[in-house]
Image 1: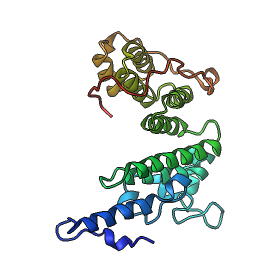
Image 2: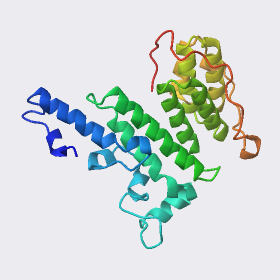
Image 3: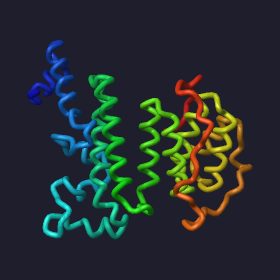
Image 4: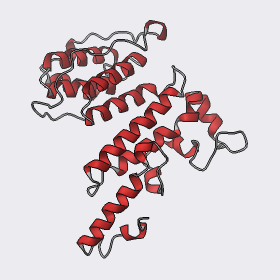
Length: 256
């Protein structure tokens, strides 16, 4: 078992030797070992908790269980706000922590990929175990699409972003991230059309307005539309079928 104490910085936060750096890399691998299996990350720190949503502190496995005698005293508040999907939200919290850890400079590409794969499993768990109207599904589908793009799976990503938009037509990130991918892949016209649709439902979105300008459009010409009611939205709406190649042709500067 990896000695996690070897990960502690020496001196002014610097490792004294290549061996120490290797030890840190091994520690990172140990911390992510469970990610691909969609398991709770070990050694969660207070600084990590501060970077994830507040509801995570009261979710299952974060010091609490899911029964009446073990759940957080704040659980009823969260259930009232987001519904029964709260009882599976701990998997989303796990995914967020594992993905944060995967951003470390000493984390190997293989460990990064395992963390993303594990996060997809966690997101899938939340989707499978939550009601179809769970308020966080648009966010979760969008996060899934971003991970699928990072894993070079554009067809799956397009489906995830499409499902996010179907769940909540005015959820601008579901338009933005897919449009950026289309733009970088040379599908400028399609990206512009998608951004205009997003702006019609979310006219105050600054990222979409900026992206439309970069795509040669004018936000002032977009006519706002009323957000469709649940009865008019099909959660299984068909995704984008014209998926561009995996490798973008050119980079662009956009807000994230």
